[in-house]
Image 1 (cartoon, rainbow, N blue to C red):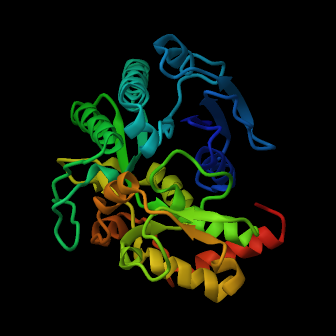
Image 2 (cartoon, helix red, strand yellow; image 1 turned 180 degrees about the horizontal axis):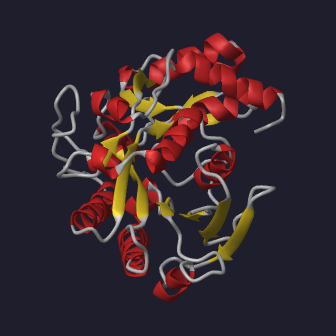
Image 3 (cartoon, rainbow, N blue to C red; image 1 turned 45 degrees about the vertical axis):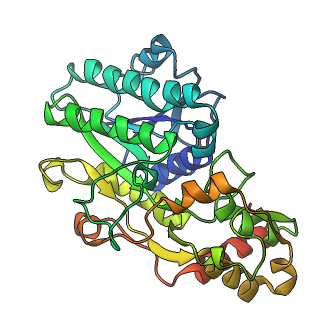
Length: 336
């Protein structure tokens, strides 16, 4: 029996890592991948794959993803989207991509899933940006989401559709609110959270980086707490999500806040100096950005991990230093 998996946003960094992780997953034998994005994705070697350069805001192109020679997907990973700062700066485009195209994908999943005995699993990469102030000291599964950004609003809107489609049995939804991932390789993206990786990634490559929070190393703004997870743990949890029985989720929602840990911007910089030295730290420049600081400051910084861990998801141990050390080793090896 084949495992046919559709990944949208597959040309992105997260989608590419997920495709490779599914290839190595012993619980996903006979893997067949359908990979789609606005630019043509690259399939992992040794895996049966079909790639699409697709405009996912075109419902006809979305529907074509379900009618390939591989047949109807068993699982859909919805990873495409306009990032947070991009959504804030271009509200209409953010709605078109983060809400309308996700609903088109969800509706196609529902429609084609009617041809199967069981509904298709629909896994959304959501975000902690669905939350806004005021917040409790620790966010729990019962904390109400009140987004204060266009990106968070779009994600929450899509979550509501997936919950309703799951309640009705149209799809088997799994909504994963991801912590901010650090350290992301590659180039900076149009996200308010981009600097959280940038202040580690660029200095480790010998490049300057801009921190938009605070105006110097002495700034109290650097004590801003963040909810974080490493790329390795995030990818592992995306794979785990596919294997959790539907009956394990709470009956009223398919939302799970993936496990993370709390660290401040200052903690990041201390880890950078500890692992790479003072010269690396001195490559970080400061220019406070009010919009960036407002959006990031509205996000929660501490969650109760108990429910997610009970479902079988995993969490990073050891804080920032092991993450920075691993990334430095990758840089030194020429991997990133």
